[in-house]
Amino acid sequence: MADPTYVLSDLRDESQDLDELVSGLADDVWATPTPAQGWTIAHQIAHLAWTDGQSLLAVTDPDAFAREVANAMTSLDTYVDEAAEQGAALPPPELLARWRSSRAQLAAALTAQPPGARFRWYGTAMSTASMATGRLMETWAHGEDIADALAVRRAPTDRLRHVARISVRARDHTYAVRGLEPPAEEFRVELTSPTGELWTYGPEDAPQRVTGSALDFCLLATRRRHRADTALVAEGKDADHWLDIAQAFAGPPGQDREPRG
Image 1 (cartoon, one colour):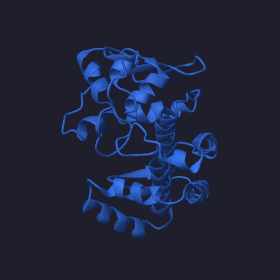
Image 2 (cartoon, rainbow, N blue to C red):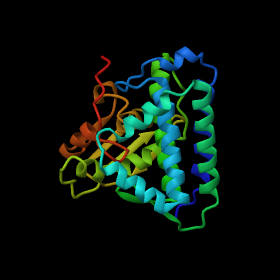
Image 3 (cartoon, rainbow, N blue to C red):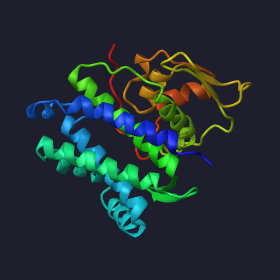
Image 4 (tube, rainbow, N blue to C red):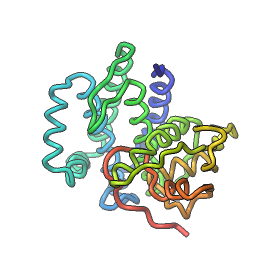
């Protein structure tokens, strides 16, 4: 059973780093477009606040969350965008306060969960650790969109360990969401962390493998970079195809990012 303490601490740090990036922005800068089509900086933070709220509902009121899931099924193509649009319409100070409140409440709720707790999520079930990992992955990924919009570079940290792990574990889902059969064999994945450590996943003797930097892999799997803009190396036909479609998150893959050249 995974201990959620470590990932919950990293989630708080990841959220605080992004908070510091946006908290000093002038109100008009929140309307800056990000690489996600149709989404401004305000949309990105609104999405995080909304998803934290949905996660809190899943943890604290399963019946109410089940009703939310049923509602989502009636408007799958617009459900997420509509929520982001509503949040983005708020004045930036109010939106920022909403995100701070929702993430603090979620952190407290997850910290209070007993060992072995599981929560219904969209199309699956989540443990406390996996829920926190998903929130960290989204916070980091949407933070990258905001950083790109502001033309700033955030220094990567070893918190990417959680994003890399969830991306590797989501391999078969990546195929399933596209109606494809996943490869029968596991891949070997070897990633160099921001501090130079080697993170490894899968059998050491696997004939098919992926190697490269953890940052490149996480950017690719969260679909924040086109594969052509990474230095990832695949050995084997199936591993090579995986890098073309890899995604760390549930749901449809969304629009591909254009190569930066």
